[in-house]
Image 1: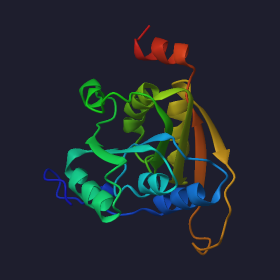
Image 2: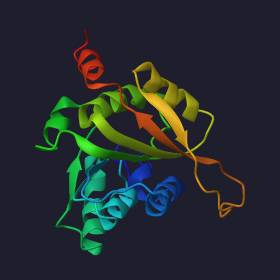
Image 3: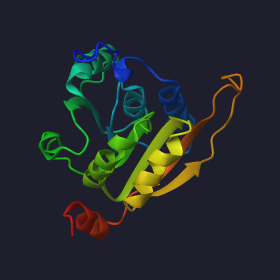
Image 4: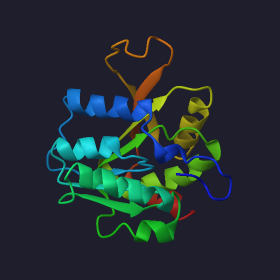
Length: 200
């Protein structure tokens, strides 16, 4: 899958190690996904969201840019999860795009993997997180820790989010070459969200 403007491959065209880490964390932690509504932002191939469905989530919405949606649909069908997993286009920060995600505007769980790579996208990601998160929403993000990861997380903090690193079991499977982390991103409270998204 290639960008028609740049000729470069879309980064969501393959499964990143962060998606594997988040899926493994979901499967091995005490976090209960049964009967939860889940959205995955920037889903790419959708592995964490599909994992959530297999672990009992009642409804999963996999979202990404339009060119990646056919691959997501194929992955949902290959796993026979059409009864509870939907695929929709969602461009971060776009009100029009958010209006298309349907009646479920708030989710119990938001999943993100390897989305902290472009500081310029973080303001739009923060606005989207505020729209899909409620007071009790759990936002979980896995990322390879790169030199710009902290800057991206700091942008979310500047929008009122709190970021807490979640302990993960290091299994040494990456040979120690890469460092990965799982973060609990705590949305601002409801009143703060409304104030920040209305521009007041």
